[in-house]
Length: 173
Image (tube, rainbow, N blue to C red; front, side, top):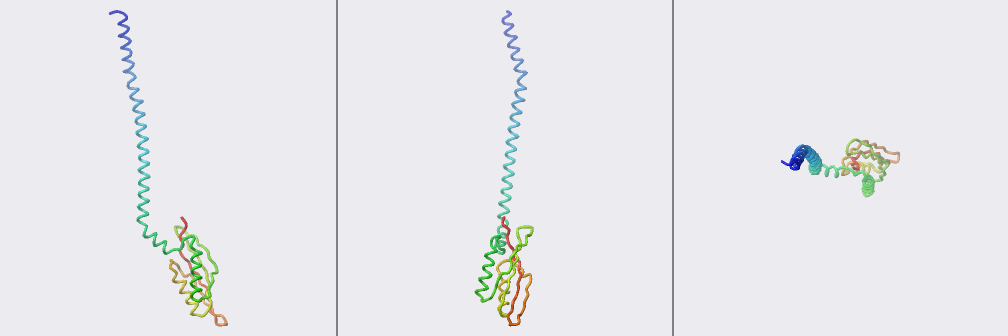
């Protein structure tokens, strides 16, 4: 063989040897990149599935509690409905011919979705009129409790009553 051919063959052999030695490194780097990409995609997919499951659970919870929430909304005063409740009480009492006034209104804060609206009112008139006022307060269309009732008759024969009630009030969420 001629020396030029030997150098060519040796050079070609060295090229094949270097290619063969670099191939595992190339495969390792490419595989590592692919694995990192796959891991990132799986992580994103897991996050998306988690968000979807949470969303599905929330939608299911809302659907499952619709009746209870509807009943609660109908049986309690909205957080911004205290003024409307008081106006309704005063209007109904005046329409029934009852001398009626609201003395104090406060909110008793509680844990959970409900607070208690505390209302103190005074009614005056005949005994029958004062009893109509108590009946009016007892029959408001909300979950409520008559906390205390006092009756007093003046020297002139006029009855007066102080009525304290608690009404369920939904918190603003």
